[in-house]
Length: 138
Image (tube, rainbow, N blue to C red):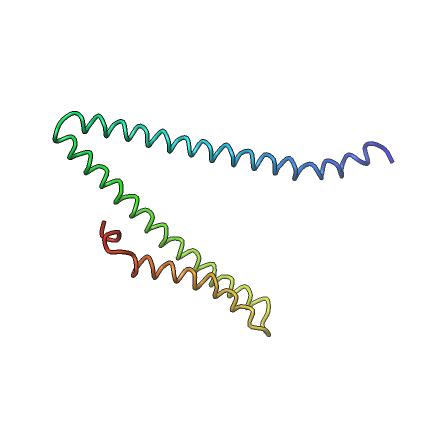
């Protein structure tokens, strides 16, 4: 057995190891840079609102309106995210039910797809019916 015979299994072993290290390094840097960006955004927004509110009496009123509008937009985005998550989860549940029914016809294993389906339905019921009215209209 020569060195050339051993290099292929060793290289095949190192590919997933190096890939895992690269993936988790990238994820760490990406999450750090996202947190840093949000921190800078918050800082600059606070500084701008501070300058506007100090400039005049009308500036304070417009700064408060701006903050209220930002809060309304954030609530609306969160509600839309819940709706989208409910639709996706319900669709995954239906897909799992069809897949399991196609794989195993004798046993009712397809009922396992009810778990994600009902989670999706619960998210949709919350988003459309149970969300507090001030959040839905705001």
